[in-house]
Length: 272
Image: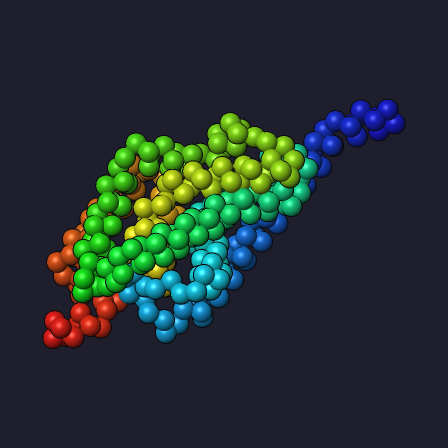
């Protein structure tokens, strides 16, 4: 039976291919989880003792970019793992390299979003000076940002982007591109859908404290819950409700927000 190659070229080849595919998937998942864990370890050590309040200064360009990329790897990789794992299972070369290129494209979108945020902050600082100081417009801007983020949770655009993130197989089959370049391009597309889904939550992180480990963990958990758990509609409404509560508290009683680092000047003026 093996002489004419029928068995060797048929089911056995399929079984061997499936084994390689499963191995590539496991290797990719383990590597990305390790990367995310290393990112959390590095960020926690790097941010210890830093100003963790709303509208924290972003520092020098090079420093911010480095910290931001590691933050995004720590926060976003866990919720992106199902998509990357499905890609690793489907890719024809059965190699973790293509899956890692896919993940690289995904993270590149979030790196670009950090560059955009830095540029916007720099321009706003030049145009408006210290307008985001807590005792000026910072408190009101933070509260408004949280309320806008809550409203976005219930929009059709948010729903459409979240749908792409929650159905990785349908997304991949509908936008498949072969080869390493295709892997990178599909990772970019996946990252764009994810950014469309989560940009308001990231804006909320800036409003609550971009250098706050507590709020980093909260936002990362919200992203994971929205993408990975069932009851999609309930998740969106729950997140919107939480953001509304946080926004109102920031506006009327910021010291009541758990984990919020209210700037010292404001606390002193309030006699606290």
